[in-house]
Image 1 (cartoon, helix red, strand yellow):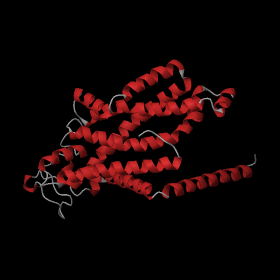
Image 2: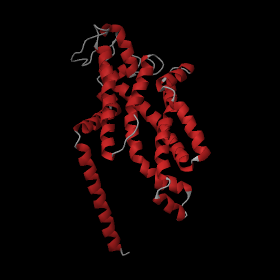
Image 3: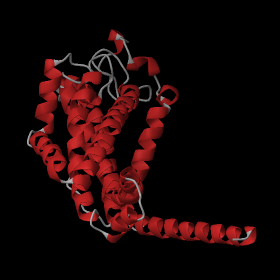
Image 4: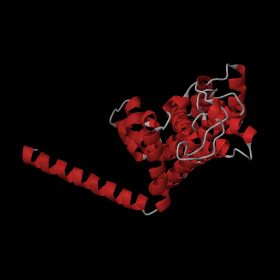
Length: 299
């Protein structure tokens, strides 16, 4: 193929990809709620990243007390009020978003690759490999995630790190089950058989041929899972086995604020709304991606 022909072919492929992205975005943006969800997630990520700059009182995210300014109602100086030791609630929420997104990143960063790898192996090989992996998966899935995470964190020291370990230890199961079901139906397809006849290695077939066909449902599942992980993390913090004071965990802030209801409602209501907004954003985005890719996953 001449250089000119190769250039023309590359241009054609680029234009085709651009048209595909344009069609995909048009379909995605036709659902306003999906775009709103994407906007919420982007906004929260930016707020978390730039929290030290944006927060009115960044020092309030740590060991800070001002007992002359406790339980102040929302004002110009403190837009969301102050808590029981005089810390700015808005500043702590912004830093709390950091911890929530860190939890999502660690849990899914561990659980998704492990679950995908085990699901690929179980779905492709079948037999005893599928039996062992899927029975272990079914056993773990039979346990309520929050109860199991609570048991693990109770046995260990109640910290954010141990909460991450507890939730991550369970999350691979969902993705193993999802990928195994897809791979089991794909392994007999013609393109897989053609790759085998061409002498392709098993890793090539798994990661270059089959895995791309699982990426759409995995992406949808990850997006929906993010909201669930945040809720579990907030639940653990609420009952005192997750993020520990003085760290600004959103669940911890809600728990501490319940002691001052209903008079100082802002101490717990605003962190609760922060959790609700973040979870809603991930769910709205996940629903939009599910419609875009036309896939169905268990939530």
